[in-house]
Length: 453
Image (cartoon, rainbow, N blue to C red):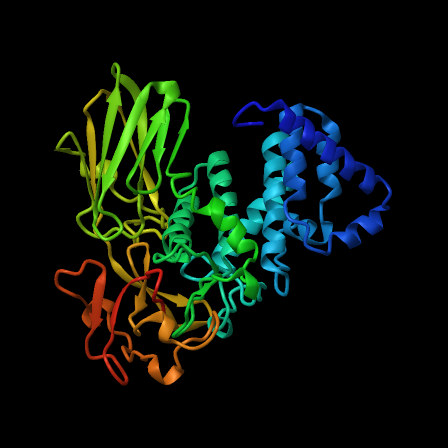
């Protein structure tokens, strides 16, 4: 109905909603809450959407029937009780809360959804943006014993990205764009088998693991992750750009084109990212248009970050990372923030204008919160993976693949990563360890759809 104006589709949805309303009317509040202990998907979001399309508050009231208070009320109080909860049962509930906030401004919905996102991303997620083991949340910041095995269900990441895009649209915070980039490049793209297109149930993050592709429906290989993947991989370009008033945000750098209809502007992004380190944005407009271009300055860029407009460098003070106020009388610079920032460029843009970004990627380690000796190795936003040979040669389903004696251990003490991890010539994104392998050195590269450690 929304995309084609098909009135029959809306009438059909209303009839189904009325059927659900009739069923729910027979249940007491206690019975309803007990029912909601079982996974019920995005029912609250569905009825918020129907309210938005019809203006009929009965559907908004019906959405509140699917408010699972045992989950949402602690979140409204900023209490993290997610440990032991089924991951992908919870995310859709909070997507519905967020949708309702967007339509009604209910602060309780905002408190619950915003706090949930913060806790999942900052305290329950792995370096790739995925979360959960065997589909369940653990205790916050307790990931060391939850790395190996069947981790990071794909539906969870699909739903977290859906929530992330909505949150950015409501409040354009660079932290949302950072997670979008992390989860898209490291999990969603890696969940698609490059050989035949099959989807992943799990894209595990542990040692010597293998992807859990769902190739055979007869063997039970058709979970929710196969279903959501049909939409997920059609959304790679969703959320690269945002517009509001006279501002245009460029959040992620991927080959793409877009049309900003209200401003009469078309843009095209040419980039060799993620292997490369540059991106060029080209504008087409019937006549000059004044607006503010808001470019994300990734937190992972190193020395040499630069922006040029039509070949002319933008002043360094306009593109520098923000400095935090350290207080006291002296103040001064602090280390680069772990959250990206935005560079705002306001001018009259005309057809043929170009903006070129140079974004040198840095190597860094991201340790687990409860074990600084177990780390992910990242190059810019990309989680690197060890090359342990063809994935199909490893035993096991999902989780554990290669035997542990085949997985190298690095002994690097406190040495900077650039001392023992060196780029492989003529192979962008590939690196080789030097002098830190306990048993053997290993080549690693950006996480691919076929190999991951």
